[in-house]
Length: 500
Image 1 (cartoon, rainbow, N blue to C red):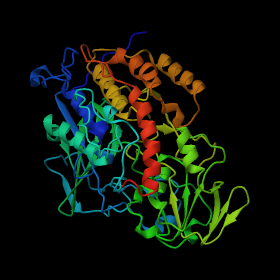
Image 2 (image 1 turned 60 degrees about the vertical axis):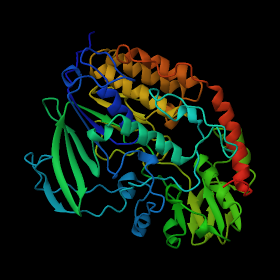
Image 3 (image 1 turned 60 degrees about the horizontal axis):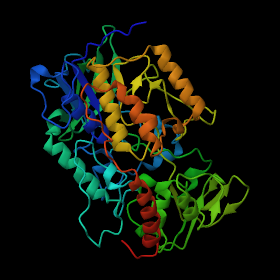
Image 4 (image 1 turned 90 degrees about the horizontal axis):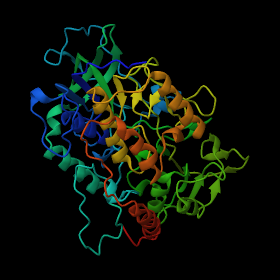
């Protein structure tokens, strides 16, 4: 069976975080003959594989998670908690498209209406003051950026980890050096994505400008979804959550400072990295701190388990009655002043219908949960049913920048016809095999270091454009061991007030 060649000249990139930045750069450096110029100059226009590349970013700047909004966290409307807040379509309601929007409304001739209420759109970053990475600096860059070891500086107690400011600087410099902002439209939210009978993708866009919404429709040959996985918070369905006082519980995404937790009895629901990160800052100021978690849950690193178990542990929250919290094991805790939900995020693509994207439900119930996986993707990157729909950033790994770059390079290779996909049946067999090796949850998408090189990057490299420089050449995976040791050390130093 042969796979038909694709005819792709125009690409929409949804999202301006690391995934969208990497994809746009990759597409710009792919020639019509299927060769790559990554690391060098952008080809002349007539030589490019893709004549039109447009990125859409809902924020007012590029960078995604690392485009910070320190003083302005996302805080949902209180009425959300009286509804089915655990569903992504409720906690992140879709803005209704104007009924009079037509094909005649283009980027140059939009339909202009009063600006919609952007509350609960979750546009802001989860980054808070003091945040540092749990990944070494070597792997927080794209491969075309030369690695620069840190200057010898005794004040760099967190090395080889880096601060959120340093990650942002890497992305800002990369976008500036490569003039990538020229290809993005900011304050532009993709509201809907449909496919026409003649194979075109039709996007409905809402651009917010000067208090007005500018709506328009635009067509593309392919769509690269790069809108990330850390925007729309997942808070589990808990009986009685709405009986809490407004402001007495937040998702970790809305955490910024310890001020509101001073002398309070606090529960952190979830023992993920985000929960442990927050705990180190709360340690000195709270009256008490308790973790609510799945008993005997394995953690990503041994030190995380030890850190969590250095605090009182409770089972998962079962129900709430005001300031009393009841747990799955039948116990309860009174006088709980604050709850922080470090319970992850939804895979949320409200602009895509079930025709193009389906999620698993690991608990077998009807309600969505934060540990779902995206179904129907080949190597987390290509929609098996429609190869003109691609994804960048689905793979979960400490090598996030490099797995992002790998997916972007694969899309460039396939969409330029430099490489071809195996038949759909083989792609489905790959998905089934991966499912048998893992579980029907987000773990399906997870590749730990250093296995991510052999099990993900190297196996996908057969699909990238010709002459594309290999992105893990001479990289030192030993930095991960140093990073784990540094993360553990810094956690206790921050917790005891020795490092701020």
